[in-house]
Image 1 (tube, rainbow, N blue to C red):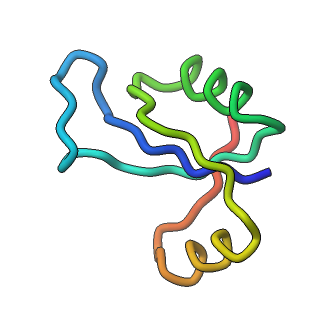
Image 2: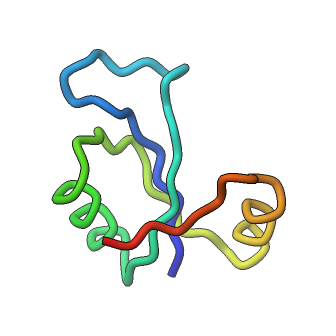
Length: 71
């Protein structure tokens, strides 16, 4: 499954909504996605959402930087 993860880049800076970024990750479940990101990045995870096929297609078409991360 592909998940969209909303995150802040730094665990030391105060989170600001304007600084929220997103990434896409392939994982079996939300807990697995959270674990992979926590172990491999310094990010603060705000929200993880499973993408439906329609949402995934929309993201691929409308996001020129679309890339699914693998660790």
